[in-house]
Length: 301
Image (cartoon, rainbow, N blue to C red; front, top):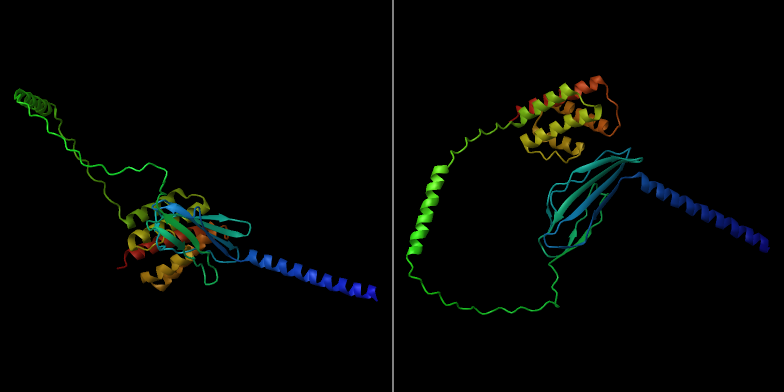
């Protein structure tokens, strides 16, 4: 009887053990297959005006679209300069990292809020304490001193000092006038190239030099991003390609031109992240599309 009970307990234990192992493995696998986000700072305690680095990180699997945070401001903090988004290809997909130097001129305990990539993907909040330089009570105390009156010196009646001073000044003025050089001619200011001319010149240089494939596609899209930023004020330099396409809908382009431009920009993104190997016809298509799109946008009001 005891042996039978022992066998039953042993059988149930094995069943529970293997079920638990299966659930743990499934949870670990599901946590590694999805997109993950993270936000960190290098310090949580700073003085007023002291810079800290806010690091934003997004890990995206191969089967999901590339996207990143869009941050305009943080309460009680100021951006010292815009951070560049670095892209790295990993064994599981793509990693996007942006380091933003920030500071605060408001003393107190503040919390950097959570940043949302989607409704279900959010970073943790980050507490930061901002204060003044600590007061050292061991330093000696310096009291405010009274005003000390100084008796004016007796005026000297040596008038010849004034004559000598006037003579020295006159001599310096004569030497200056005799040795004064003619002003150098003012150089003519350089002509400022407008955004359209600059973009056309860069596209011609890319077509003429034809760099390697990834650089070719990257430089063409960079030319387009810079043009719409300077010409239309669209904040395109740090946007993902999907966000940029959404912003371009406000330019009132005709549907056919917009669809061709969207396809070319997304194709460039696939080439950049080694998800597509283009052919010669693709190279010609993206150059012509970028060039015609800039020409079309230039004619918009």
